[in-house]
Image 1 (cartoon, helix red, strand yellow):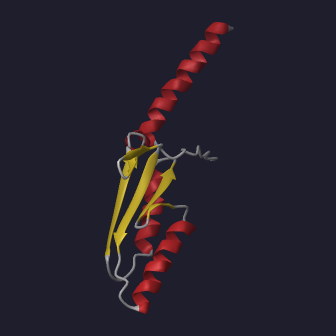
Image 2 (cartoon, helix red, strand yellow):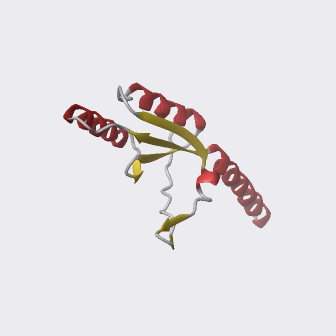
Length: 124
């Protein structure tokens, strides 16, 4: 029995290692005009739509979302593209969980702890 347990553990560790490269983070960063009341409303609506789609504010104009696969990331990227405001600059980037895990965060010159990564389960 212990041998089977060890084999199962190795398989789980292998899958976990693969998941770090399969699990994606989608980053949306933007610089939107806010000179007029209409532009401020459009920028606000864009941010609200990102939040409604499960994105979290990383910085004021950078939002991130954890996605269990590239396919799921593409779904959310398509949603972001469908709500783009008429003016301004918007960038969308995908990075792997492994790459996101190597982030270094600083507040002034003090290094900050990394935010807790929430494990999401996908049911098919």
